[in-house]
Length: 140
Image (cartoon, rainbow, N blue to C red):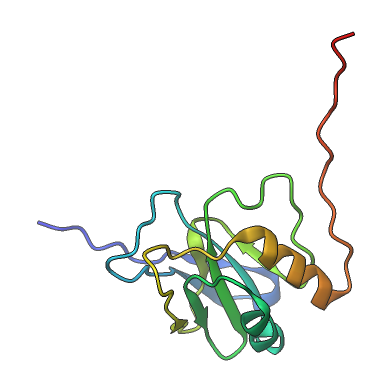
């Protein structure tokens, strides 16, 4: 018998007392390969069309009335701090506000390349991109 996974309710300070925030995991369309795992990057809806129109490659994009979400490979937050108001969601688990798929990729990958997405989010939010430089060692 199959087990049905039900989103768990969470409490959040911004929800106010007694109000639960229910989460959902973004569903990847059948036929797309998710071998790298899935995380999601969300931005307020006011940035959605700007980002979508400027990205050279686009994976699955989901939207609700307030947020747009891009699927990225798991770990796309390693050594990166996504600028506010962007939201990074590990496991592509997001607040359940009824997101729907608004862009299906042409190929078999559900992912949006995270670095171009990160640079666009930085540009639109007015935050300079930053990540740690690798340590360089000399063998001399």
